[in-house]
Image 1 (cartoon, rainbow, N blue to C red):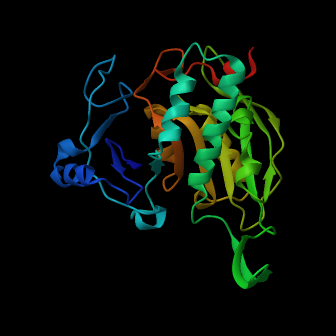
Image 2: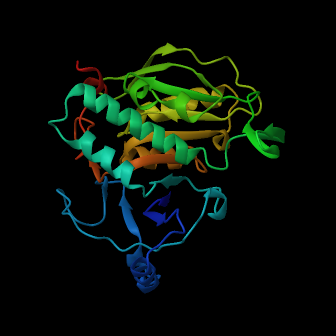
Length: 289
């Protein structure tokens, strides 16, 4: 599912053409009315009109079947992709459980990162074509171009865990570490480690990895650093486990056209800057500290 962010709405589209007959009937019954949108209210930072806590309910959305990013129009809008894969839902559920021990949590968030990067790399990786000899004869082939490695930028600490399996998905990649901490009182970001290059090559593609998009301060600071090094919004994709309206709103205002891949969108952020229901402090839970 892909969601486009506007000032007052989050519009969602399905990403897959594989619908059951029942799902096709349900999609056909959705009427294109204002109530078909997930409303986005930046003042109370919740999805929908219900006060917190948000009850568990089904929300009708206007659906547009899309096989890929290229088939979704409106490149000047930020799109938030929530891949409808059962494994993604499974790992999000494992991460949410407060009884999940640290080693299992770290393994689960790494698996989630692998799946999200797999989805985000569709139609985005540079390839080369040629011909090789298989044991049975000549075959036309297509490889990922090793001359253009994907840059993966995990935001420390928790980004390390989410990006742990990047090399198992991306045959050619480089890792650049970026350390940003958040003041617990002001919630403002502070950069304490920057291993980014002074300038990225012209045709670079970058996965910016941060598990929790809560208030938006950290991810916007990271985006600013990437833009200063010559990258456009079209060259960056954000990978996160959980996203919330305040962060999505800030990204949309400053970086329209950006694509964000997340396991789930949660409705709100509390006064301490934690996503609700979220999954707690992803760094502490990943590393047992």
